[in-house]
Image (tube, rainbow, N blue to C red; front, side):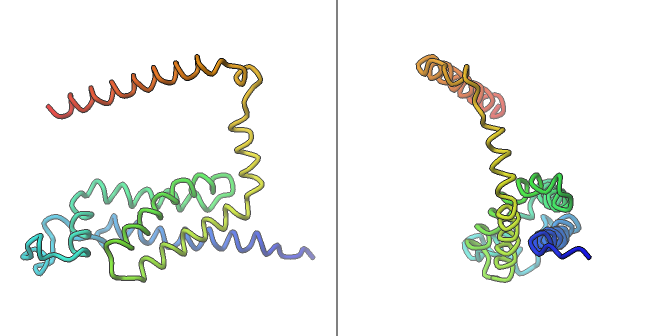
Length: 185
């Protein structure tokens, strides 16, 4: 009889747990269960002046203003959560979900008086960190392969490299300013 690998069981349970609840939140966003939607503000919120609105009402109204934004966040949560289910894609799911969860945590700390949502986001974030911790050796090896520098690359003249980087940096800035100019018209 094969013994149970508790580390693998804990990791899989953590991934399934985050998958389940982030799907609920993602679907809730898409189906209208979160945020005050434009044109569908509760009357007590709609009659308030901006100066009189509390942080929660301002935040919920702002987040609900754009259906495209709400859909993007909801779909991102769902895709990231689904990627957690499979060993081959769990790290991609984590890469998608960590910034989303960090944003939720900061948002909840600043704007929302309800600590239930904050504690849930912290738990999901912590479970993703646990998955990373359990797979730290795989991640270290992958990072070593990713940043491995060949002998020829290491011998590049640092002055030439700095000059090339400076020119490219300048080109990025020119492109950015051009985009701002074109889009502001």
